[in-house]
Length: 309
Image (cartoon, rainbow, N blue to C red):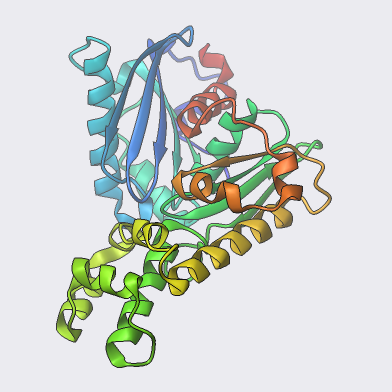
């Protein structure tokens, strides 16, 4: 389970800080970064996007893309920039569960007045239910589920990373699609529409597929996921992968709240595309999210540093 990391400037006992002029909420995953900029009263000023900021892809890259997205939000607000010393920032990022990555990320923070960091699953949860008890299944490039119980305790499931976990996610679907293409090339599997589609992207010979896999990373494999959806009607292999993904999402949701007592929200592109395939029992609990992960990141910093308000 992830935990909220606070920058030392908001941990000191009796430490007096200037009130921030701006608040920033950041949602960062393996495919992209989204930033929401508000004033001190919570009025939305601007939004910005940039490349991935999952910590597993590198701390330097994460900060580079976060700052690019912050600048884009500032420009949309009609500002030349947002100086870190004038802003409090909440971040929901993939990869926070790896303590060394989180600490390295915090060590490079560029001087924000206050900072709160947690996993993107938890900020999705905060945004979806406005900080109230509930559960969220967040499945995009990666997959993770989080729940906030009525007693205030947290539950986290999945989110083990794309190499050996994140079942049902975009990266997972892409990996499975690549395996189908490899097996078809070897003669170990049928040559179907999905395998041909992967070959069209990555190459139809062994050296090309090996080169693609060596350089793809999480984002590259996730880029193959749309091929699974687009060929499911024609290719039983693609349809079988979607069935497996739905099973993974069902298991994830049930692990968070076996009794089914909490409202459940879905977030992330893959979860939303698979939603019509989920069981009626699960869909009966589904509620539309009040806000997204960036909204949850804003709530995270405001909850973590109430003395700044």
